[in-house]
Length: 381
Ligand code: NAD
Ligand code: ZN
Ligand code: ZN
Image 1 (cartoon, rainbow, N blue to C red):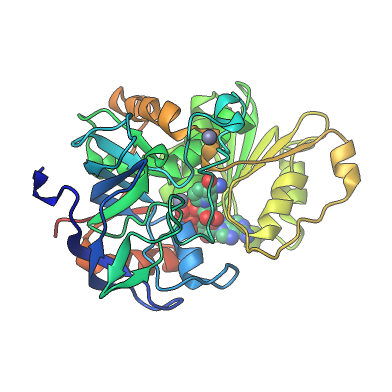
Image 2 (spheres, rainbow, N blue to C red):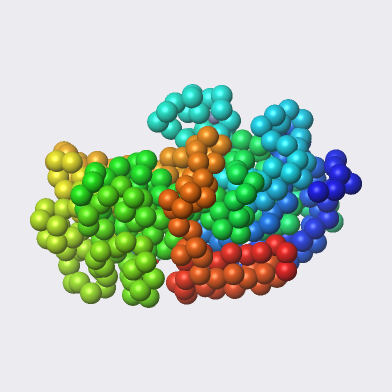
């Protein structure tokens, strides 16, 4: 890493989203040096998660453009700002959309990863330090996305949103632990917590849902039921320990009724990874009374409302939700990376496409068509 760029603006390529739903454009942007508590990162690999796509489509979300999306990635610290003590130039890092300041009540609580300072904020397009963007084109600022903006060769990120990882970990694989896979895995292992021998329903068999299924397998669930509207998903999902598949399109009645019947009263746990309100309600209503726990992971449209009869809760069902699988990024993610290094967790099967940065719009097309799981975008063409 050259020190020639220290404290200087770096001109580099970034994929800029100028308008909702329009292809990204590779532009020359200027990336300002990191300020207090920030680090500038050279992104090596990034991938597309459905959350990027929702905010790019901006159909059920607040539109904020021009913007540089991207939050699932791996990179190397190019330089650090004043006061950063947990990182050094050259460290390998995973950016995370929800941070860990280490000081607030949430960071000090064993139960929460909702850091007061650095929790996810999808409507902010600037850095918290000075309320400004570190990206510009001809002096005009470009908005950040969830504090990460990884669709750029260089980006500036708060040091609390960077997990320092084992330098031997292959960045072109562990980049998917920076959002989707950790989210799904943690939703099951840390939040749903299925018991050995139990039944688990997974709604949505994209990368997040299949990672949730991996969590169920690791926890020793005996029945893992996968639910998806896209029949192509079932073939892919066979590699993930799912024992049964249900397509809501094949049934005339609500899918929660089908699942309740299949499992003699309901599943022990369910994890919803679709972002669709109907699936969220089904995921709750299909859990067994007395002990069932449903966990919501999918990001909903901002105006939807969750409706269920209160008696469903009175009958001792639990509804929970989670960001990033309740992992604290700096504290917990290095050990999730080591789970991969120790072969306790497989990542290769999640990676279905590889493309170069200049082809980034292809990743959006694959996801829109429901093709494949994760598409790794290499920043070095
Ligand atoms: P994906 O597009 O790869 O997978 C979503 C799957 O859900 C698809 O296979 C789709 O066919 C299926 N689906 C859609 N509607 C459905 C319905 N009504 N019933 C059954 N299946 C349905 O997306 P992904 O990248 O795996 O992300 C999944 C969800 O998780 C998204 O909503 C994303 O925004 C969210 N997410 C949340 C967090 C978090 O921290 N809470 C983190 C990452 C992603
Ligand atoms: Zn994500
Ligand atoms: Zn905090």
